[in-house]
Length: 131
Image 1 (cartoon, one colour):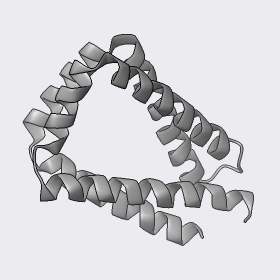
Image 2 (cartoon, helix red, strand yellow; image 1 turned 180 degrees about the vertical axis):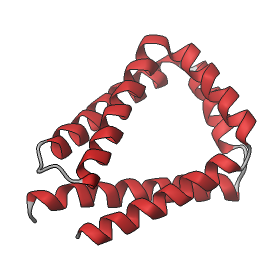
Image 3 (tube, helix red, strand yellow; image 1 turned 180 degrees about the horizontal axis):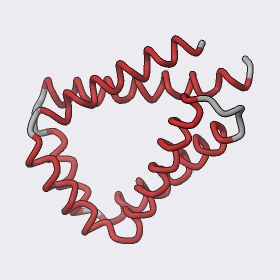
């Protein structure tokens, strides 16, 4: 595996994750809303999720940022950075972040899960193009 392949592998697994999450919500609508209610109720769960998000996002950012610049490496670095920001927001002000997420999910209906499936498929195709 060359260092250039790392961004492709990260994109592949991120795409598989996004594809599974989006299909799961399309098959059983309302699952994301239930999950948000649980996040709002359990502060420890938000904290743990924030810590994990910061850790995984930081690793993705550092792994992709240390490579020769390519479109995919830059894109995956941005994804890792956004995961770090999300984790920090969950820890620092999870109640407000969850309120924003609840409003967002309530307004977009099935568009967001469909977009997540599309994004997952695009990431998988980009990953295979880079491998």
